[in-house]
Image (cartoon, helix red, strand yellow):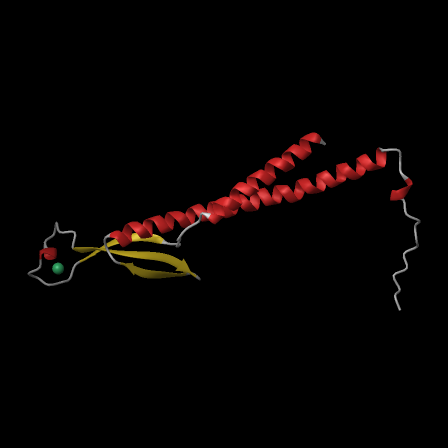
Length: 143
Ligand SMILES: [Zn+2]
C-alpha cells in the first residue's frame, strides 16, 4: 500500500514537471530543413562548370501533409537558424507529449490499485456494516 502511494506521488510529481515544461514550449514547426542548389542553365554562368555546386543555397522546409510533401521557402540567414530551432522545439514537444501520455497512463492505472487497496483495507477493518447497504433487487424500471 505504501509503495503504491509512493509511486502515485512520484508519477504526480513527474506530471507536474511535464506541465511546467509545456508552459515553456516556444515557437515550433514540423518538417525538415533542406538545402538546395540549382543550376540556372545559362551556358556562360559559373554554375555551368562541372565542379560548381550551383546557385544557392536555397533553404526549404519540407513536410508530409496527408501523404504529400509540402514545401515552404525559408529565406537565408537568421531565418535558417530560427527554423532549425523551431524544428528542434517541435521534436522536444513531441517527446514531452509522449512522456505526458505515458505518465498519465501509469497514473490512471495506479489510481485503480490505490482505490482497490483502500476498499480492501476498509473491508478488513472490523467489517463495518456501513459498506453493506441493504440490497435492493435490481429493479431499474423507472416509470
Ligand atoms: Zn547559373
